[in-house]
Image (cartoon, rainbow, N blue to C red):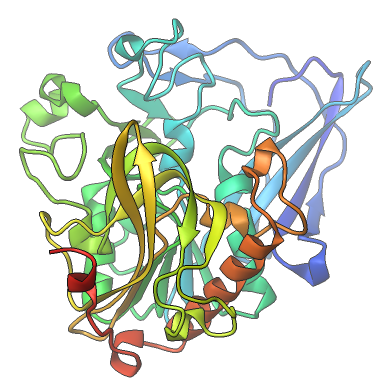
Length: 426
């Protein structure tokens, strides 16, 4: 912790439904002494920034229920009120018989500019000076301090807990490190922005899917970048390496490690569609979501009709069926939404597929799906992209249908897909 305040407190809130409150206080510290710590230290080779700080507190989570937490830090005795959050996962030891909510912590840090650099831009705002690796040993530079969790994950978590879904909790690095963690899981739930995966995470998720574990992707641009986890002075898997187009300069690649760039690229091409059924197709877009199969069981109770649209629901990134790449079959297209991306006409697709071992596969094809779960009433402002209550009601009902069906076991056995791709793509 770093603060100019003389003292601060830590309050641990478990995130969930809790009758609409959204969180429950599990623990609170006494007042702790404040300390202003040094600025970021940057590795000269990778340009990875880290907080090389003195530990100010240690929290024992023994007895805390597994789940997703926000630790709230409150300044005490400061001239102005100050408050920040720290996201924390109390992970599950076993996932058997449950749906696994996966925190996309790698993606959170890929976009985290604490220390003035992330995997996209350096201190000068240019791509050429970007970091080639990012450290988990640092805070998040965002207004609330909680990275991408509040926008792309929290609404889905609250909905899943509201309907009483049996949940297990893990992070992407947990899945990568532990080959058997998904043994017996009913479903794997990928949230709204889950872009950065290691080969190990992908391999273990694919193995679970091929044993009959359902896979639901509630975003877009999922499993797009291949990364490598390395250790730091704090512990294992604290540094995420991704050289992107400069992968040939990566010392790990020169020593025989997989390239850290897009999964679909050579060498070692593994298009994400082989796992997810859809392929990332572009950024940025803002387009209506268009229903194609209102009679499908996943759209039951929505009242939607063929061709009905929901403004702004497709964005800011989107996925589609692309038969030039490996695509599991049979697969059903549930939504077929025209988009224009950087002057190029394309489509975004929501899909459902069934696989040989019985797993069901659902992918929304839009990054705004989880954000829409909170949409109520008239169209919201800029922060909510103009999403309205209609879009909110639609996405909530479809999401409930997915979660309930996938929690019951291999959905592909009980609800096999009827392929309709030829109606849309040759």
